[in-house]
Image 1 (tube, helix red, strand yellow):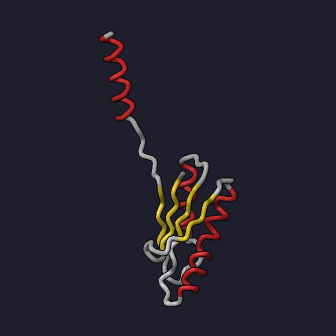
Image 2 (cartoon, rainbow, N blue to C red):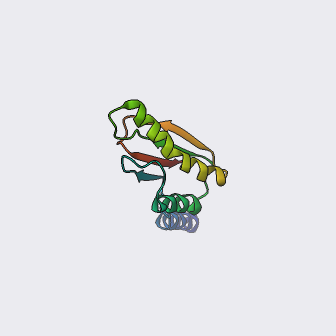
Image 3 (cartoon, rainbow, N blue to C red):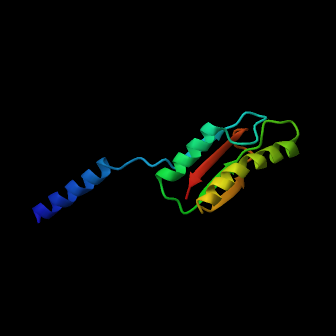
Length: 112
C-alpha cells in the first residue's frame, strides 16, 4: 500500500513539475491608423495557432483611439478581418466580441 501511495505521489509531482505553459491568450497592439496586420502580428498569430490545437477562439476587439465612436468601431472591425481569415484558413471557429472598455487599439485572442 505504501508503495502504491509513493508511486502515485511521485507521478503527481512529476506531472505538475513537467507541465508546459500553454499561452491562453495573445494580445496584439495596433497603431491608431492601422487597419491590417503587420508581418510580425501575422507571424505571432500563426505561431499561437500552430503551437496548440484549438477548438474555438474568442477575439476581444477594442475600438480604435478616435474621437468619433462610429469610426473607432469600424476601425476595430477592419482589424479583425485578417485574423478572421487566418482562423478560417485553419478551420478554427472565431467568436468575435466587441470590448469597448478594453485598452484602445488592442485585440486579444483567447483560446477556448
